[in-house]
Length: 83
Image (cartoon, rainbow, N blue to C red; front, top):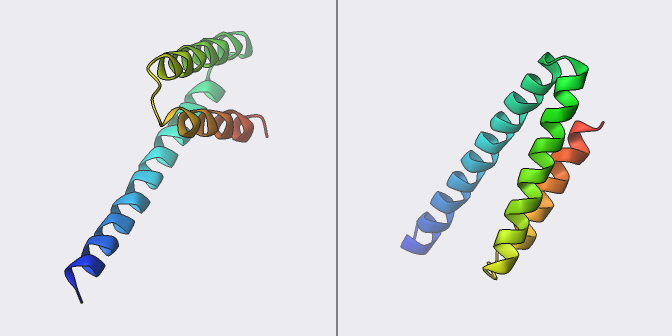
């Protein structure tokens, strides 16, 4: 196996690990929100949405090339939570 192939395999494995870590964190956050009384869960969810909106605005201000990726991940998180 060439060095390039090894590097690609290493990057793919690390990418999969990061995706799973993100899924674990999202699942934990969703579980915490479900454990809260409905009124507190709604307040917490709105606070999280505001924090995400602020982060997107900051990334846009900085012209960060990953702003779309952050936006898509935020949308996916809330879309999954609402189902």
